[in-house]
Length: 262
Image 1 (cartoon, rainbow, N blue to C red):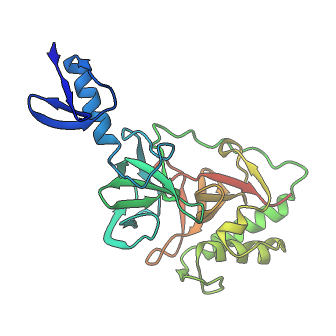
Image 2 (image 1 turned 45 degrees about the horizontal axis):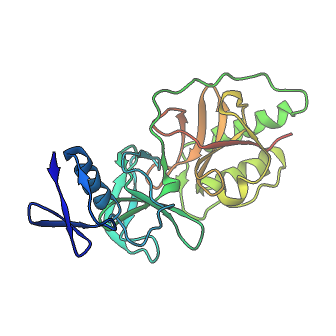
């Protein structure tokens, strides 16, 4: 048992000043002293955050962007400047704290002057259940769904181009808009932010061909693809990859699915 005493509201341990406290005289066990020290360190991670914004530093998240690509690391969340560093898709990082900016976006602090957007992360998954494909219900036009799948397959191999919606090149939401319009005569909006608001949400265990898969925040996703059945989907992936067919996996797993055809 060690005794600790206060001088001018400051706790001294063996002559070393370590922490301001409000009580007049406190006796701590060694374990309690260590606990106080760790609390002092945790609360100085970011003085701009309120206590309600700070998460336990033991939380881990996995970068969920585009395989082969990375996300930017910023120096703060209020007026962010790119640090020049990027974290590749699939890497797991520890979260020190979180905050919400004036635009309503959630940010994670992963180090000193290192912040990333939360929408590009997911909680690490231990396993993934294979999608059990159900037969098309009578309320859905199987012909429309088949046409969507057929046209999506026909676009595989075409180039990726930011802001393009075909027919020679696509970005992710442009591909969805093009395929749905041409194959099913369905008007689908242009961006992932608005496309995710169309149709109805369906579970990942009850997907049907032609359903839309989204990555990122369920309310403001950054990527979209078209489910084609057999645990596969087609999407305009990224520059250098173009329109490709991929299989669902825990390495790059959607955050929400939408059924547009009804």
